[in-house]
Each structure stands twice: as C-alpha cells, then as structure tokens.
Length: 270
DNA sequence: AGGTTGACCTGGACGC
DNA sequence: TGCGTCCAGGTCAACC
Image (cartoon, rainbow, N blue to C red):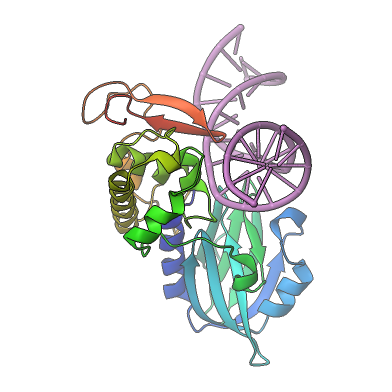
C-alpha cells in the first residue's frame, strides 16, 4: 500500500521519464469514483499541456503543468491502495484495471492502473486539496512534539491522521513505533517529550531508509517502471504476527486499532 | 469539534 | 474443483 516512500519513489521515477513532455491525447475509463474532477475537465486540462515537474506532497503525486494557453495547472494523482502509475511503450498491452492513459510527445504513455479503485485523479489546485498537516521528513522537533500535545487518541491513530502528519500509513506507523519502543495504544497526549523525539527520529529513519530501498512492495506496489521495492525485507513487526521479535524473541502481537491491523512487540514496546 | 466507525473496492488466501 | 468467506487499508462521510 503506497505510503510516503512508495509515492516518493513513483513520483521521482515518473518525473525523470516525463519532464518537459507534452500530453497529446487523454483516455479515461469512465469509472466515476476514480475521478474527483469530471472526466471531461481532466481531458480538457491535460490535453496539450506540458509537464513541468512531478513531485510528491504527502501521499499525493502532483504534476505541475503549463496549459497550451500558458496558464498553470495541476494534475493530482492519489494511488489509494493498489494504484500504479506506469510509463510504458504503447506497444505494451494495457494491464487490466487501467483507468487513464496519457499519450506523451516522447512516444511513451503514462498509465494509471488501479484494481481496487481507491485511487483518485483530479485537476484541482493543490492548495484547495491538501489540508493542514506537515511533512515528517522536514518537521522540527518542537513542531513534532506540539502536534500530539493535546491529542487524546492512541499514538498510532494520530500518526495515521493526515491532517497532523502527511504520508504515514499503516506500515510505517507500526515500524516507527516499534523502533521507538512505544506501544501503539498509548494515548498521544501522555507521551513524554523524550518519547516523542525518539518517535520522530525513528519515523525519519524508517522513511529515509525505505525511500533508499525503493519502498515496500506489499500488495501490488511497483514503481514507474513496474519494478518492486525492497523495504518489505526490513519490516520488523508489520505482517510478522506470531514470529519472534528480532530484538527479544517474543512473538509479535497483532491487534486492531483505528480499524487497522496493528503489529507490535509486547516486550520491546512499553 | 475531536474521536471513532464503517463503506467503498477487488484479488488472493483459505476452508470445506 | 469450486464455491463462499474473510482480509488487506487510504480516505471520507456519518455518527457519537
């Protein structure tokens, strides 16, 4: 499931392959829930536009465009659970569940493929779309501590809250809490400053390491070339229910928290 | 208003 | 073999 490292990997890969190309033609699938802007508007804005830059903001991929009229525009892609953004030759057969195909001036196609259809495409302005929330890789120590100060929710639920921090999902929430030695159910407001600073460090380390390894390939995540990442080999608790903790040997426990499967070591995390 | 829960989706794993 | 059931989770709406 694409979280910050996976989205960053895809955005960078797509950027390198499509920058400065023009969108010649747009096809969309007509599956209504995939499109947060009307499909006709997406086609109208994209067709003829030049792609200036592709980057990640939170879990959203943002393509900055210059329209043929000279106006700026933004194409927003959210991968949801199973969304894939692929740069392929038109000769390669369209995968099942393809929902958008952008034919580019360089000869390739930018394709959005999404089996489970939790992904979303739109041409809204980013400011109108992105809520509050801070990037975990750049947030200061004081700002990080302040985020959780008065939150009476479990720390894991707070980590998943995109209006606090951008880009953390189920895998990296569990992995960072394990590395910081904090139980997922602890109330956020009751964590000490020292614990929160350890969590900030753990989160930054996990995210940076995962970006270096091209993300975690669970479900059907792949990068812009269809290549899988390797961080899933570094998971210490996520999906390791019943297996021995890599630090103390106690079996990893699984509970449900905030409606999500949550994995932790009952010995190492207090 | 902060916090919590369920709906949306479908492929894959599992049990009988 | 084949069918039914359950599970995965990012986000949003609806509720408490």
